[in-house]
Length: 168
Image (tube, rainbow, N blue to C red):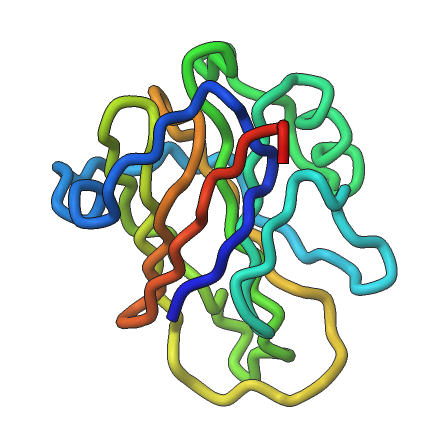
């Protein structure tokens, strides 16, 4: 499955082939926070790329955008080690209902990078989820060296994010 879209297009980004991103060396993401996102108070649209009905990608590139996310989700301040000039914050929103056992449904396993473009690998925790209109789950990590995401893999599902220039 693929989806064309871009959370915040940058004209200077040269697309990296999907196979190159998928085969890049994995590295552990730096966790920044988890939160619940109320359906009636969504994140700013320019930061979110819908992947499918259940999942959306979040990419935060500026301190101003982080301040907005931090305020909306009641997250702690960024650690001093996070440099948004040399990377971004990446997150996944899972709108999967309410977990019956209180388990967090998503886990961001690893990032991969080729140049400044990256991919995100995540896992969904199977289990019983009540089909309610409930607050979505948001997991956020720091992605050093990555300025855009070109591929998201959630278990065996892959979503290709096509970068578009600002002239389109």
